[in-house]
Amino acid sequence: ASFLLLNGPNLNLLGTRQPEIYGATTLADIEADARAHAGARNVDIVALQSNHEGALVDALHAARGVHAGVILNAGAYTHTSVALRDAISSVELPCVEVHLSNIHAREEFRHHSYIAPVCIGQIAGFGATGYILAIDALIAHLDMV
Ligand code: DQA
Image 1 (cartoon, rainbow, N blue to C red):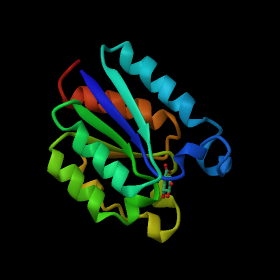
Image 2: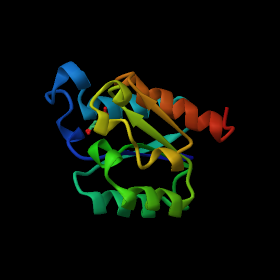
Image 3: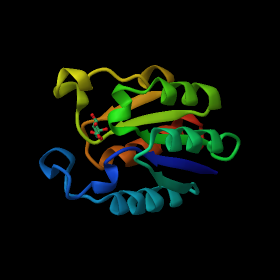
Image 4: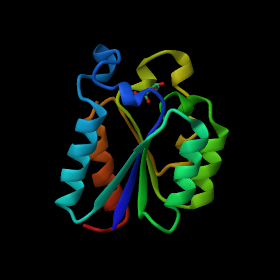
């Protein structure tokens, strides 16, 4: 089985982007750690990052029937994108929402997530570890343990 690890806008800058909020771990590190953790559980990770909303929608469409689930940090599109929410609903894949920071402890506009209602759950505030927790959550959800 495989999971799509999808990261949205500005997450390509992880490591140098506001490290006091998002940590010093780079996206390449996150993807490598995810591959190792999932791989030890016989799950492949296909990782993709885009700064473009439509490219993220396309990636979700392409995941249908290919991947067993999706781990998604939609970045700022979390708080704006009905298109991403509809894409998640459309592909009928279990999706775990991840945020490095605790969005509920930050500015008011980050408290609302358009995608949360169509995800199986949300992990926020645990930094890069959140992606590892998301892999375990998807595996447990899919009863692969
Ligand atoms: C984020 C939180 C969002 O509010 C922000 O726009 C991001 C990163 C996080 O991982 O904490 O780009 O999704």
